[in-house]
Image (cartoon, rainbow, N blue to C red; front, side, top):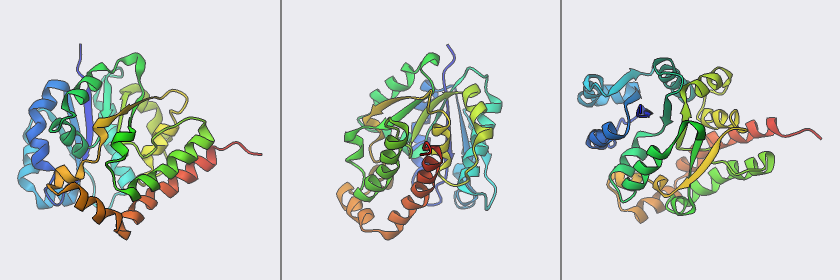
Length: 256
């Protein structure tokens, strides 16, 4: 049986995540057949050694984003490259490198691997959602702002979807049909992909999507949580993609 493919953007100008990605690569190779990654110019320019490693490591199919490209276009370019390089029936795991590195180096490792390996073609697209336990590890401003999108989605769609998602399993052919229809160019592209799959996508709540930043940044969790909760910048960052998601949902709402 062909192993699934993992697809991850890599943006790490501080160099905090890349050593973790390198550390879990042997585990990734046991679970996934290949990994498609996109590397931002900031990451390439500040961490050439790790960038070279990603390019030379056969497991990774590395590409580079263009300077100035909006984040949504960066994601779409990466996903399009993966779709074009894979067989239509191959299962792609659209994920984030820091989340995956955390899951594989924590007590969630076995459950993460089991959940990935349990995904079957007949069950995709499948959206892995943060469980209540996972959500409660995140800063309060993260939870409350991102839950706005979820709550509006419940009112419009009559179902609960984590529209600020972190992990989606989908066949290449399914993703290939959706991508040409995606119009947004900011981080709300993630929500738009799921919204265009809303009649088909299944969900599974998982604990392994707990907040990864304390581990990746080697910070004490409670101190970092308080720091992020008091940060206006962090609040504005989340509003910058939740507001477009709410707009997308308003366009889906039935008239009258």
